[in-house]
Length: 110
Image 1 (cartoon, rainbow, N blue to C red):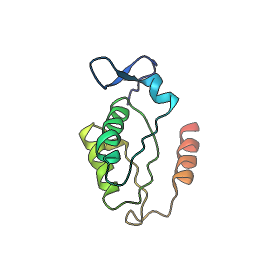
Image 2 (image 1 turned 60 degrees about the horizontal axis):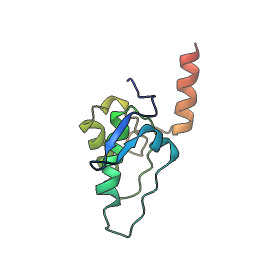
Image 3 (image 1 turned 135 degrees about the vertical axis):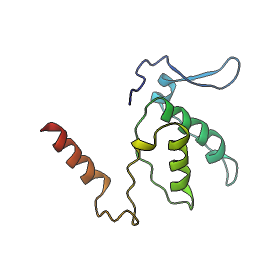
Image 4 (image 1 turned 30 degrees about the horizontal axis):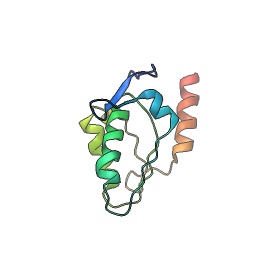
């Protein structure tokens, strides 16, 4: 999957005057709010969609009920279903993300 690398690439149009670019994303994002304030359903959804569309990779750790399904849905909505590597007790894998990555790098070096 191609990914964006120009730091001026628009990821989100926040308002008529405010843009969120790849450069902003690289500087870091913090989202604060109380329980039920919409961190996940609002800014979290918008940012994750922008990152998925831009070809970002990452590791999502999920604890909240429904969070795995949420990320699978996000991947589907943004055409990234084939990018998902799921590590959980239902996958029958005893592998960790770290050991999976090491095996993938070793295999690609051959």
